[in-house]
Length: 200
Image (cartoon, rainbow, N blue to C red):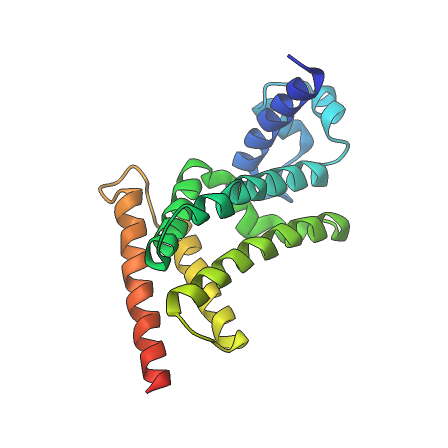
C-alpha cells in the first residue's frame, strides 16, 4: 500500500474518532489527548498527521463535503426528469447523514470554529452543493424564480433535511427511505402550491 494511502487511512481513523467526540462533547471541550485515546493512538501519533486541533476539524468537514459532492452531478445527469432528480438529491442527503451522523452534526455545529483560511475552503464546497440544489429547484419548478426566493427555498429544504439530527433515530420504525420520501412530499407540495399562488 502506498504511503499516501496509509496516511489517508490513519487520518480517516483520527477524523472519525474526533467527529464522534466533537458531536457529543463539542469541539472546544475536546482535547487532542482525548482524540488520541478515542482513535487508539498516541498523542504523538495524532500530531504526526495533524499539527493542531483545527486541522482535525478542517479535515473532518472538508472530507465530509468531498463525500457529499463526489459524483453528485454525474449521478444527477443520469436521471431523466426533474422530479426524480430532486427526489434523488433529498434521498442521497438523508442517506449520507445516516451513514456519517457524527460528521454531519459536527459540520452543523462546529464549522464556525474553523480559522478563516480553513473556513474559506469549506465555504467553497458548501457553495457548490447549494448551487447544485438551486439549479435542481429551478429546473423542477420550470421557470424563472427571483434569486431571493430561490435561496429561501433551497435553505428551507436544507433545514428540513438537516434538522432531523435533533430527533431522528435511524434504528427506529421510520426508515431513511420513508423519511426522505416524506420530506420530498411535504417540500414539493409546499413549493408547488406557493409558486402557483405567486403566478396566479
